[in-house]
Length: 200
Image (cartoon, rainbow, N blue to C red; front, side, top):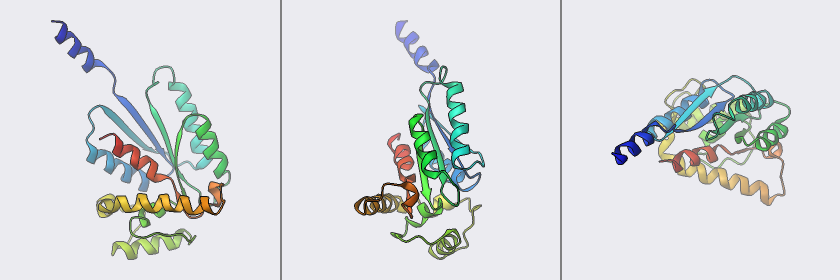
């Protein structure tokens, strides 16, 4: 009887939750939801929401949400995903999030850098328009932000992207650059991807 009771208790325990809030409403949610669906995790719930908010606005909204739920949602892991683009306060947004215990997956200049790194080591700033053109060339099909199958097109190259992203970090570090805003190009999206992978 005690063993049945224990099993019942285990079933009723709430699952751990990872909440991911992205700046974009299409590209980032499509990508991270694809990984989530592929992992098919039973013990951890991953929620991805695109908020159409940029940098500081996104971080401040998530901080408020986190504080509202802190007493009842202590096991939740929080992430924000945003780009530098032309937004101001990029470094400050990262620092504010980290101080509040929120993980950051940023891209400088834009999220599409992460996709390009699946194919090549890009260490020169090229601008958003050029990112789209380069991805169209690399994918052998037109790329835009509504490309919903992007994950399936690049997932086999994920380890290459992780290695290239880490090499970009090392390149900037070796050059004595500590400001994320000045690390162009760079991305820490690989940290969230690795976090997802560590759950399986």
